[in-house]
Image (cartoon, rainbow, N blue to C red; front, side, top):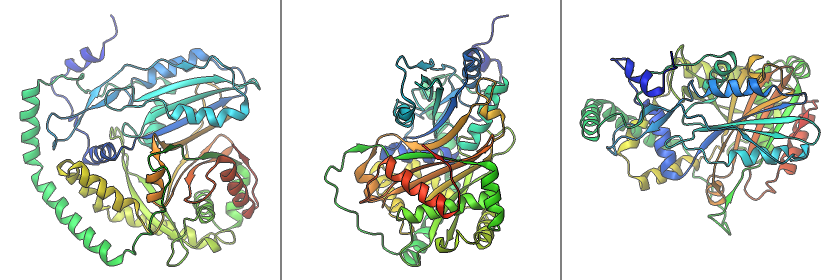
Length: 457
């Protein structure tokens, strides 16, 4: 029997699952579309031994038939929620014809993140391979953050590598006749009115609280070329796993605590200290993904402020503060997510003003996502262990004006894989040099403060 096509498999089931985006996924995508942001996730594997490309192609095939085998289809109504539709059109693997020097690996990775990624029209992800002059091979995977978050990606990677595929039950694109879609979405929007009312109350309360507690944001620096598109410098740090764990234990902390402490100290060097007390604030995503979860972004956010002056001597206070922050967000859900119900009813100009208010955060928070121990399977794209693997979040088409207006940016991802602890840093500091060599130097200085050494690329 011939394999089922997406259209055939979707039509077999009489009762389909609800294919509307969750309100958080819809709100994130809609707001970022309004302000021109496009978040992507990149994974990289480097093999210093021959690669089994048949296995890579098998992974590529499976990956496009899992949680990434979908895209977003807009509602015909501007205020209704968008929906997931099936999309099994896997883009071809892009194999570079030119061999690149190993020293250019980081630049090649940056280039790959700029290739068009579109969660609506597709492709929502891509893979590429480049051969390096030292005999190694690098493989890049880039996907839209509006299709999947970091921990969801770990699940999708494992599925692809072990051969699991998923029939999500989504319809094919444009399966709903326009008039029927308008009527259905209008009825659903009416049913959602109570949630919208609750969102208005939450937004009013949060606005009142922010006016009472927030310091005024710093004035943005003048920018000579405000519309200039730039790439935020990014580096990867790899520390021996045993050395990392030994240092964490010596300082009275855990591997995760040392990760947060390192990020806070690097944030201090990048000017991310709060003016009122010198603390560095970390924004920590907390995984709320459940078994069989198909949400794109299944997370809430904890926030913790750490005194960077103490973090190289003793991690016990930081460990306690992080534990309390994570426990609090699990016990008392973040009701600010309710505000996402308002995004569909908000004009684009207002969404841009909302973004201005969001980015002008006087705490200068650092976004730090710790994926934890992702397991050995994720390191085996071709069935064998890669010598090097990493992951990061970045954005396409960032403008210097936006980065200056928000007071800079620092996003960090970390993971334990194979025998290493890997940290990826993307950072922009207003008025600073903002180059990879400069960021590598700051990272090396921060490692030295913890009596650690590592490979920084």
